[in-house]
Length: 266
Ligand code: ARG
Image (cartoon, rainbow, N blue to C red; front, side, top):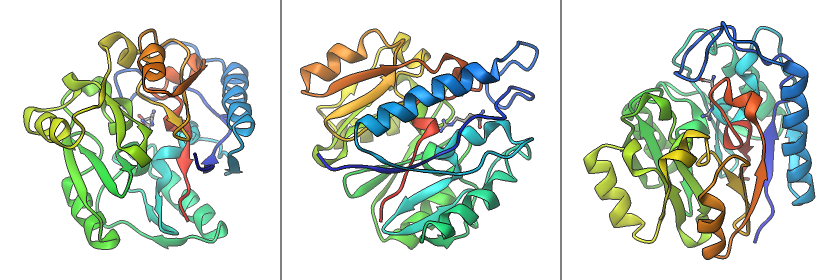
């Protein structure tokens, strides 16, 4: 097990005032203090696991800023900036990039449309990169050039699972252990996943629907949605300790544990 360094954003201004994914219903009420309490539980869970946590100031009028995973992708001390699809989130990119610079990271502005670690997950030495909704394959090419690493393109086909991190979890990157919902991917992507990760955990639909795949951990523990029913036993079978956290309020914006977490890799 290695410890983790992450960036998070307290949901002080969280609400659902627009809809850019099928989970968001602006006409339904949200409870911001409740969102903050639930987020605090995640924050304390990470502290208990010994993670080093940095914060970015939440900005008013940017209710989705709590989903820090979308702010960029950080590896080898480099921060590849986000380029958001929807205008509502575009002002988040410069705010995140400024924070990355403060944290001593070398910021690389993206030319291509991408939503950071929401769509690009690092498993061991390679990247798995989602496309289909929020990130263009041109960004995968850009990342290949910048990083010199293998980038595997995966095509998402279900609008409910619009970011890769809603359909696929890195359980233990050091031993190439992932979990995913097969139905979220097209045929060639599924073939690639089966070839690269023959021992992957296959998620159930009911777990993916409560954002069970939107999980984050240190290779020994995995913090997951408290609502996931099948995933905890699947994880225990592989020697991973599941820790459930209830982020029901943040689910109203279409996000969960992983969305609230951006990993910093120096
Ligand atoms: N409301 C946000 C959006 O649709 C949720 C982002 C969730 N983040 C994630 N990493 N999946 O952009």
